[in-house]
Length: 277
Ligand SMILES: Cc1ncc(C[n+]2csc(CCOP(=O)(O)OP(=O)(O)O)c2C)c(N)n1
Image 1 (tube, rainbow, N blue to C red):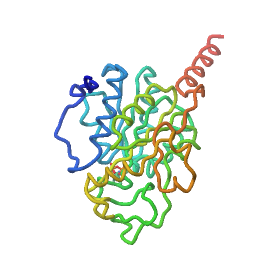
Image 2 (cartoon, rainbow, N blue to C red):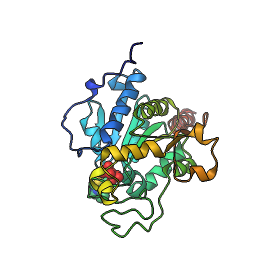
Image 3 (tube, protein in one colour):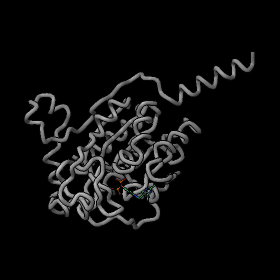
Image 4 (tube, protein in one colour):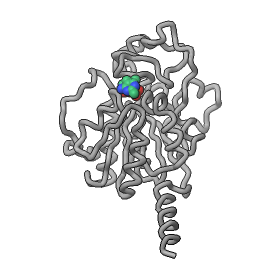
């Protein structure tokens, strides 16, 4: 039996080497995203990438794709403008949990609410990596970061729940251990008409892992493997067994909801008709 062909993503990569620390999971997320483009047979000219500010936000700067890196927290607002300006483009946002859920939290809930046809790949490393490992809205209670040396006292957001309650219509989660699944989910998110959120659980062994004694990259990936349970498998498990688990796979899909770019086009058509009268 011949091995499955691994898509060649070299044409997308420019300006290497990157700045990520050894053991960082960001490269795996980027690889998964690029393989999703290959799976969908998308030409480079059909895609625009908007990235956040942070270690994960650097991703866009290494790609041979049209890209923009606006100010911290504004990636989704900027992506909304790009999509409205050229609705034919597949607009992909690559941004961290801090960028998306902290300073950009407002833009996140409104992008979900509008159901604009943009795909967000949310890099969740449970912290602010680039600025020194501070706590983020995703840092679990009790965990240590440089700003919570005695343990985090804030509750953490579940990005999936937040996306669902705010109106996103495709929501999925995977991890850097499950790179192939992650790539498939990103491809499905891109194909979905409406706002898609793919939460990519990644690792920061340099800051977050060290402060919480979670081991090196291999141990942290092993923890992701152990913690993950597919949504299908979870359906047959009781609540107690799922307590410390991380649900993965497609977690919410709603088809047929009004998509924002189309809604704007309809308003433009109505206004033009009125003017012509
Ligand atoms: C307006 C503004 N505030 C703060 C910063 C400093 N800053 C840069 S990156 C960052 C946090 C990044 O965290 P996250 O989005 O989770 O990305 P990561 O580095 O973990 O991938 C912060 C606070 C900034 N660049 N601009």
